Image 1 (cartoon, protein in one colour):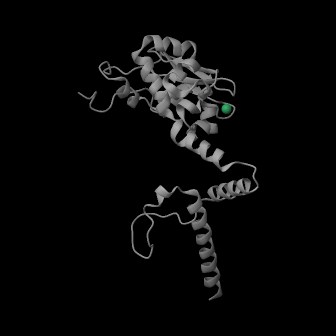
Image 2: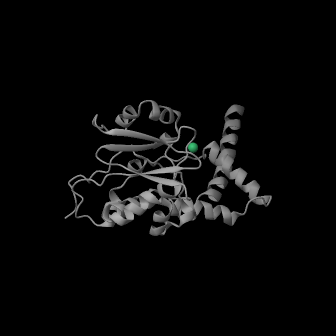
Image 3: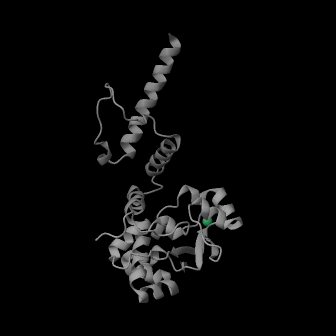
Length: 245
Ligand code: FE
């Protein structure tokens, strides 16, 4: 049947094209589960990468081929975002501020220099980052109403909800309602301050240290700090069962 043959041919073509794209795009360490697919199994396979992934790979190949971008520069960028930036950096900053009042004072007055002290380098956040301290009576949280400005070096890439129109508009219209949807119910006597990031000024929330964490080490404290707490849509809480002995 001609239709079946056409269909099979198209599927075969897509599979071959996809195999080539995946082989080029996926690091060799991710091929550990390569195997013959002529058997029953209960795990999902995405045979054809998504259209954006294929388009990205095609564009990258073309730019490299034409000499418009350097493959080594691309690799360095990818390595940076995979291994060097992320919320673990911010968590280290928060934990240090919790245990060292002098560091905290420096962080609140000159965030870029204080963040550089933990080994991130001053250029990582630029000179225009402001750290906002949450207290029992003041709760800060951050939005970018215009687009999605975000302190990447300390928090990594922004989550999808941060970039959503709903968050960007509602955070300023109904901040307490938005926080409730994140599971954070604040007492009426807590002042909520919403900070609107811009391309020139990024904000980073210093959350409250949770009660019961007094005997924890700096690295144990850093483990508690979440991305959401540093955006200000959550508080830092102790692990279930309390601190480790
Ligand atoms: Fe923005």
